[in-house]
Every structure is written in structure tokens, then in C-alpha cells.
Image (cartoon, rainbow, N blue to C red):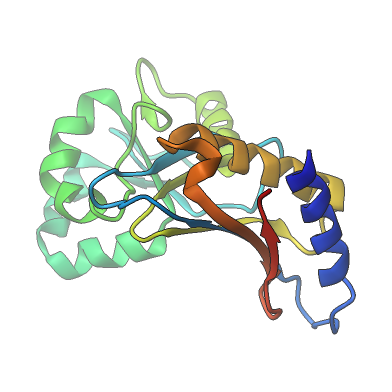
Length: 210
């Protein structure tokens, strides 16, 4: 596939750049065309083969769990203060919840977590049945290999890994996301203007689709 080969070349070029004293994030940027994302929403939810990073996850559970930051129903009243909801919305990347608590979660937190795209989702994050440590650990692993994104402009920018990862690992994640975006777009590749890949401190390497 030409796109994959060009992306592999782009990663090699990026590795020639000046070394930094931290592990840079690798970003994938997919620029769109011939689509108005306000009229035709592009909502991406996909699993990638390799963990991108450890996400900060919190859970709405009936009782505290030592394996995850937990917010119990008794604490919900604290979040009638908008400032407190904004704090946790910024602090955590992802939220999970017991199914039976979802009506209360939606009522208390929905107005902030919903627009931020962080409400517990049936796709990944709602626990049906008993909660135990194995379920929590499995969910955390799945979440760290998931990408959830709602395009608000004609450009999708997503972290896909770290500079320290092998190119083969980065490419697996890139292609999983690229193929998921193509599938989501009404015109497929016709809706993609170009693709870029960059490290935190570098200029992007641009790939034209052909």
C-alpha cells in the first residue's frame, strides 16, 4: 500500500531530527476535504494493536475499588459545583461506570462529560453485572488500546504512540486508525486531502494520497 510505504519513509525522516531530552509523542494528522464535519459528523472509535499511553481513568462505582480512582454515589452531590465537574473532566481521559448508575451519572455529569466526549459508553466503559478486579484491569487494558475522537474541524489529529516505540509498532497503530477513518468517511479516501505524521517538536512530514 502506497500510503503505508510513504508513512514508513516519513517516520525514518523524523528520526533524523534533533534528539530531545524526552520521549516525544508521535501524532497522526488526517486532513479532510469535501466534507462539512458539522453536517456530517465524523466520530471515531477504534482499537489499535498496541498501547498508545497509560490513560488517566476514573470509575463511577457503588463501592470504592483500589485498582482505579472511584467516585461513588455518595460523592455525587459534591459535583453540583460546576468547578468540581470541570476539574475531573480535565483530570481524567476516560470514565467507566456501572450500568445501574448511568441515569445518575448522566444527570450529574452529562452536561460536562458529554460535550467533552468522555461519558461512559456502551462501546467501552459500561459495566453490566458484578464488578471485580479482573473486570477493572481488563477494561483499563482495552481503554489504553482504544482511540475515541469526534472531529470538530476538517482535520483529525491523534497521538498514536511514542518516539521510543519501534516503527513497526507505530505503523500498526497508524494503519489501524487510518483504515478506521476511511471507513467512517462517506467518500472514503476521496474525503482525505493528505496525511501527516510528526513528533512533538518537529514539523510534520506530509503524505499525499494518490
